[in-house]
Image (cartoon, rainbow, N blue to C red):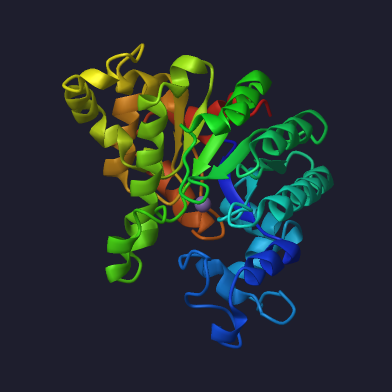
Length: 344
Ligand code: MN
């Protein structure tokens, strides 16, 4: 059985150098960061890069992120993962100023396309764009798909507190729909207006809860904002088995019906989640959660993913292999859904 993992991350020295440039170096320890400047404090992976030369320490997550070559392939082989669909590590280029972000996104897409060509059939790529410059983001997306052969695009949730239901971003969504590629909405920390209560305890703003809260809010804003009535063929991918939404679909519908101002939608919120969304197993290796997504959305809407190198390949593989799901549906989740969606 083939295994295709679809939320797998990389970075480059240049990306690291730009992220460090956002921070006030006076307040930084000699190596890595704790919490500084306007960089989201949950970007833990950055800590394994040396501030002076932007190189990672051996054996760290940073070292794995920067290796889009033999080391990564070896770890894939050890876990029986045939293909990784690669995307730039969070926060992408969304924290940078417009001009820097647009230029860096172009160079990152060129680099990614090169890595994909070096390992044909093992790597595919998702484009990086700078939503803070919507027109440039749309044209870079078009170039990345039509000229570089990338298979979709990934956005790290809000861009400086602004979400994709804002019509200024719709030129991006229009282009995504026209190109017929999926848009992965990957977590970021909650937006500036939302994050304060999360900062009371370490970790709360990240994978423990903040990521899921922010992306599920983002998704509901898009649905309630009529994005999928305007772009009915748009296909969105959510990680972490749908960021809690499969568990909530029925309650969302029930209470949406009581809100007269949202009744202008063409369908129930849960219908959009079923028709316009795929969810991946990234970072979620718990059968009760998998079975909830499986029952709520069906096997055709679930994709295998690890979230390498933030999470271990072997744990993700063991989780899907031991899941109480029939072989035909496991094959959909492990590879055939991804082959269709990304046209591999
Ligand atoms: Mn991830």
